[in-house]
Image 1 (cartoon, rainbow, N blue to C red):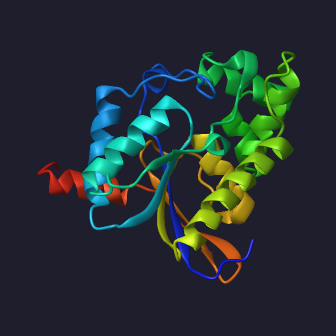
Image 2: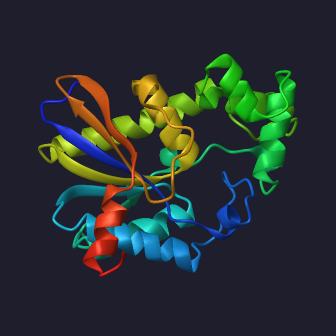
Image 3: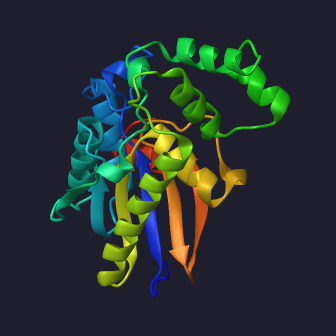
Amino acid sequence: MESSSRVVIYLTRHGKTILNTLDRVQGWADSPLTEEGALVAHDLGRGLKGTNFVAAYASDRGRAIETARIVMKESDNHHLKLEKLAEMREFGFGKFEGEYNQAVLKMVAKAHGFESIESYYDKTSENNSNIVIDTVHKMDETGMTENSVIFEERLTAGLDTILADANKRGGGDVLVVAHGMVIHRIIEMIDPSKNLRIIENASVTKVIFEDGAYSIEEPGNMFYVEAGKKAQGGV
């Protein structure tokens, strides 16, 4: 998609949830923010104060919506209408929803002949979410999961929607609250060299569209959270 204006998407992971705390798989399944998760969302919002977003989006999962509303209020962007975008929903893990994260990752690794996902990444020099996505898709006989092609098509459609709306507004900064696998895959789609093994809760990855092309800046940045803590008088 071509763009006549510069668009900067502040792609943010939601705050920490109950299932995150329990180290359970949380894709299409949902759980509310913990007290810690809400606090870090407040920190993020304070850190973003002065950033005047032209639009705000969240995936249609409650944890993303809750995070976005806190961030919008704290950053003085509460006048915007929060748009819920199903295309930014997390990858669905099918029958593995609610399982322990490490148990699922170990099954993925063993399917490729490794004892752990870390050893797989270390020995293959690969850090690609498609490894998990396509392996889970093959292992889930319920048919509820997406493969990597369908997942990427969904995310591309979401980005197209966000970009088209921003262009109508003359470009600018856009808040998008989404999920870990979503952020990993978007980074990989645009610039695989910028991918990280871990995308922290409330981190910000800047997705920039300018001169007809996407780029990634500051992947997984916690700067805004830290700035918000300092503004509140924290360490």
